[in-house]
Image (cartoon, rainbow, N blue to C red; front, top):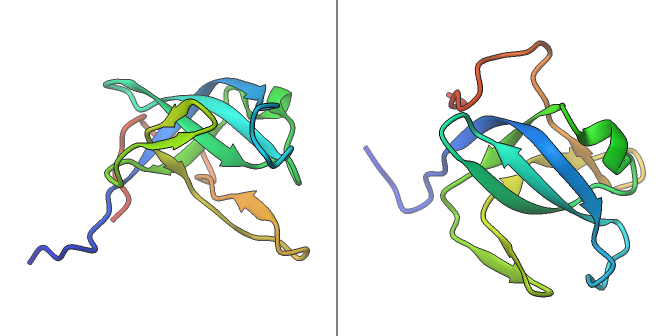
Length: 106
């Protein structure tokens, strides 16, 4: 049974990551994430624990059906999933091993 709170989380691979100086938070990055059937943009607050260089080529989990959010002129189409680290700042949630792009979390 479907509910209005259902969310689809898919596996993607970060194909580009860059700083986001226009954003109010310097820890925010602009990501392009390949979901296998399309590439989506994501504004992700990952600069506390990750660098743009280490993110490229990394598999991530993305919530893909939450709608688009405009962040300082950047259209963020997916939410890159993270959880609070010891310091309370986001740490990526990633598969333990490479899996096919686009796979859905269930």
